[in-house]
Amino acid sequence: MATLAKNNLLLRGLKGITTTSNPIKRETLYRRVVFFSLLFVGWELFSHSGVWPDYLFPGPIAIAQSLWSGLKKGLYIYGTWVSMLRLIAGYVISLLIGVPLGALIARNKYFKDTLGALVISLQALPSVCWLPLAILWFGLNERAILFVVVMGSLFSIVLGVESGINNTPPIYVKAARNLGTTGLRLYTRVILPSAFPIILAGLKQGWAFAWRSLMSAELLYFTLSLGNLLQTGRDLNDAAQVMAVMTVIIGIGLAFNQLLFAPFERQIANRWGFSPSK
Amino acid sequence: MNGDYALQIQAASKVFYNGGKAIPALAPLDLEIARGEFVCLLGTSGCGKSTLLNLIAGLDDPSSGSIYVNGAPLKGPGPDRVMMFQEAALFPWLTVQENVEFGLRQQNVAPQKCSEIAKLWLERVNLQGFEKAYAHQLSGGMRQRVALARSLTIDPAILLMDEPFGALDAMTRDRLHIELENLWLSTGKTILFVTHNVREAVALGDRVLVFSPRPGRVIADYKINLPRPRSLEDLVVINKTAEIMQTLRQAIASSSVSQELEWQL
Image 1 (tube, each protein chain N blue to C red):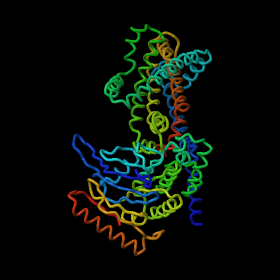
Image 2: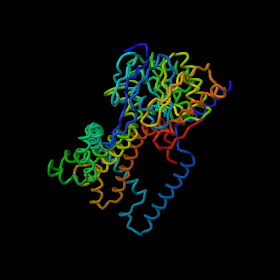
Image 3: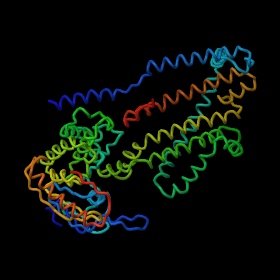
Image 4: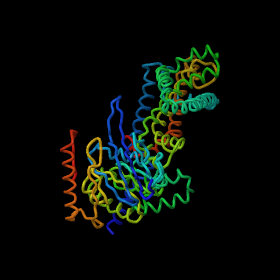
């Protein structure tokens, strides 16, 4: 009877833990609304104060107008489309090369001593540094841009996969071998799932670097794209357009984070029991 | 080899190498364990009892000698021998149910069947209702119960337990002793149970093997013919415990190994 009561108690406690849909707390929402309202109002007022000319320092209203007209003309939408295609293509290529390469370096001493060292060295090079070489090799075209994006994200992915695999607690492998897991299954059923939190962090960093590399590269290009729109804004002395495009870039970055990575991160936190940072 | 024994060990030893220096962990050991026997391996930390368990599990190879399981020479890990560790080592990415099914899935048993067998074992370790939980949501004792269920689903002939209750509080440990004893009585499995807790060994074992400090060797082999279930408050249990403690103390006193030795009573 007592055990039953205890079990019930535990079950109730368990339900409390497992239902982890975490909506933003009212308090947090309140703070954010107040903070951003004050920021935007202050910014708007400052832009009219005459300290700087308003074509150099536009307020949020001017930026919103520029954003709207750019969207209406289809300019920003088309630019976003071009940039997204490049980003996704570059990222997918990085994944296809990076994940197997990371696994290889993690499990093979010879690859670790050679390719591993090369990857760590190249990781130290900001990817936009590849651009002059890429233009010499490929010309001022799509291939050069893709190359820079891949160079930006590839090494983070490789290192994430490698460190995820290397940090697999040996006890999981031992327990699995014990229960009859052998060969390739040891990777697919134990090592990769166990490494997933660290691998995901690497993939996320790779994504962020791909995004940054792409924007740097596009600043130098003349085809319509988000980076190019920033540059035209400068050429036209139109700070409102520059900031409107920056808003689009921020929005895309946030959206991908929320749609692509956040669900996996929530799932990991749920399973591993990592508590969300306070 | 004689198939009547669950396990026959002939002159098996293990030497580890650390930077070219040989560290003998297990002196050549002869041992025969009958089917269905509950054997406790007792000794100080680092006396080679966990090493022996790893050898039997096939997770490590002996430096010399041979091991026979059910009369056949041992070849690597196999589903006839499953090991449990001090930490439950549950896979954090799987639910309790999926953890318990894991071994069966590796043998390509049909999902429906896996699920049924896992449910059955979860019930037997009193964890019904926790199928969908993850390891971090369970207490230490519950995790070890899941680990026990996970080991038993693949129906091993031999269960190798490496201080599985060492990290638990005394109350939880006592309860798990009773549950383990009942499972052993109803399944007739051979159990090798490593511990450095003398009372635990006497309470559970048919046989208690006392190991000397490193390199490990068996210095005493006690048969414990006491009725079950045994109570730790029972005078005969206390007397037997004291007797074995005495042997252990002498072994430590006469050993040249100087290491911190903590005996739990």
